[in-house]
Amino acid sequence: MATEATGAVEAAPGMPQLDFSTFPNQIFWLIITLVAIYLILTKVALPRIGSVLAERSGTITNDLAAAEELKLAAVEAEKAYNQALADARAEAQKIVAEARAEIQADLDVATAKADAEIAAKSAEAEKAIAEIREGAMASVTEVATDTAQALVAALLPSAKDADVSAAVAERVKG
Image (cartoon, rainbow, N blue to C red; front, side):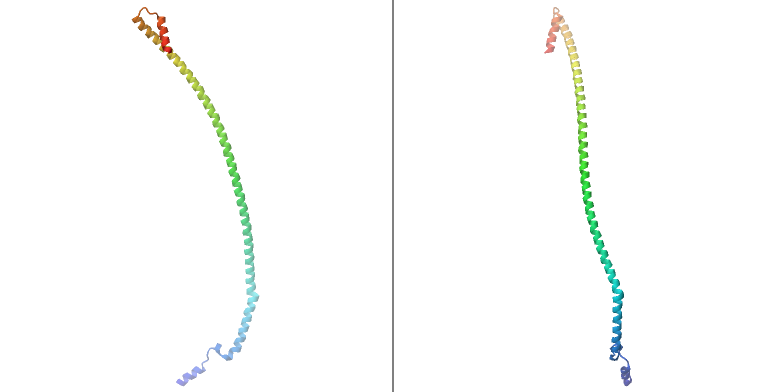
């Protein structure tokens, strides 16, 4: 049995890749396979990859150029916007100043009119007060004269009414 097992080991073929008798055949097919892979890569795959890379490079370059143009356009638009904003602010300030001046002029006119009305009413009131004062003074003088005449007549029946009236008028004046 041991001899059979030993014979089986010798008769059993080993790995065909390591069999030196098949090396020339393996080298031939290796060269054929490598040449086929080389031809497929150089004629089919690499040109496609190259065209895709060239297209991507062109697209990236075009996109970068377009982005730069858009950036310049955005900068110009921002400058125009800032200028328009500054112009609008200046115009608004001008309008506000004009409105303030107009309102101040209207206010000055209204104030002058109110002052004139107040002065007129004040003059009328002073005139009315003066008239009332004169009327009151006349009434006070009359009452004082009547009272003084009655008192003097009761105390001194010989006194003249004209003298009493003159004395009362002098006393009321000052």
